[in-house]
Image (tube, rainbow, N blue to C red; front, side, top):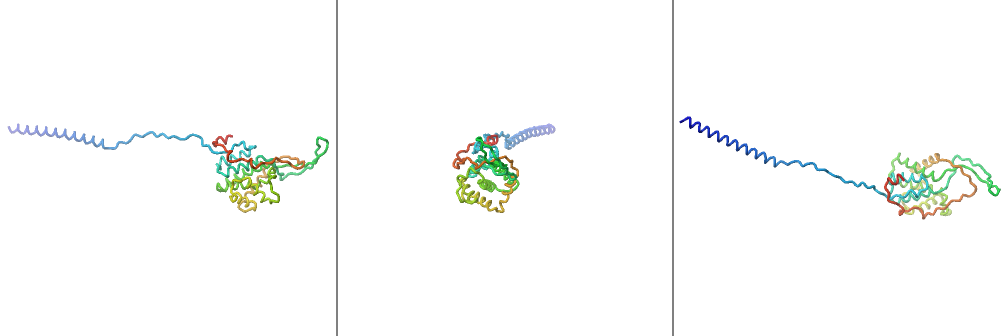
Length: 278
């Protein structure tokens, strides 16, 4: 009887243990599930799509058809297109001056030329005296002059504003070489006054107190800070091509009408690529 009682107790204890173990396992499983649900699940990476404006940016440029020769077109590209010196009034002022030098037929004598006296027979059998010598083209000088100034800027630190002002001042400095402008000259003006008069007439949108004219006066007075302009110009003359020329009296030139020079309304919206392959 005693052993039966002990066996019964053992069975009951075993049953209770098994039941409790099942309950504990079930609670543990429920707890683990609840913890998993509470954990923040990492978000799946989202595909990001970026949209870019692939249209060409268009800027107001002047048509290269304004210029007659390749040299002026090329220097316009170098200054305006490559450097993006498109702000006004510089842009229009540069184009006006470039067009004057591009269209001129003016020349100056070569530094190394020798004059040869000629007698030229005319159709009617009479003779006309003439002189033969070699000349430089003003338009070619100015284009090369600007090109060499740009090379100088590349080797020396000058601000954007200083570069633009020096370029315009250098062009006005040599504008009296253009014979086609002489019909608007005012008598009894000194060379200095003449250049400034022409500069202000052509660059009428520039402030008269603007740095262009201040630098022009420095060039006229051969100020130490602008000595490089003279050196660049002299070096430019040394590399010019010579052309044969025969003078048979007073040279006649087609007059320029200053009022017909380009203005801002003549600019066109073009991409840089459009101008570069023009």
